Figure 1 (cartoon, rainbow, N blue to C red):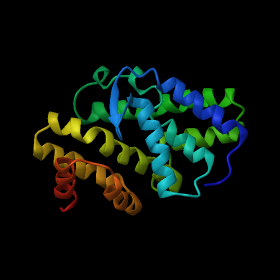
Figure 2 (figure 1 turned 180 degrees about the vertical axis):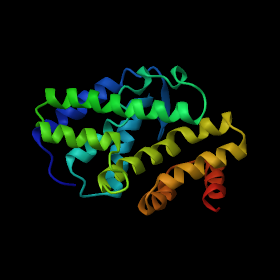
Figure 3 (figure 1 turned 90 degrees about the vertical axis):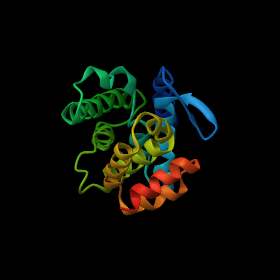
Figure 4 (figure 1 turned 180 degrees about the horizontal axis):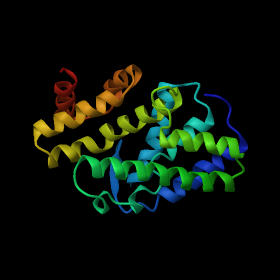
Length: 197
């Protein structure tokens, strides 16, 4: 990992503090945490695993990729794919605006803030390795923290479809990292089935 500026610890503390207010919790690696807090911390960790030379702007984007996500619930959008896509787009815009305010308050320069915001929104996903790194981390965190819950709510065929769509978003490095995710036997079986096709 590259060296971190003095503002980095202040920024991560501000992001974590904002995400601690998430009313939904999740068990992640044996610890119960607010969902957005767990997602942010684990995403930054996955970026560090996949990209040991990641700079602090990439790490901040990963940490803030679900910043205050609960404030715009999925239920406020129509059911179906178009509603989901609109919700996800609006969430990324919100996360980018919110992290921009936190980073400005902790001393980051406008160009640095713009870079983090672009990564959070996944601008130029097809051509920007940093945006793909954030996407990889987000997908890996979803599998790690939410697969078991989603598996209880969806029928198997639909769930396999969701996992295949998730896999299509991952880079080759992200696909390889799936084996490192701590999962139960049932979840591992689902992934094996989904990834085998």
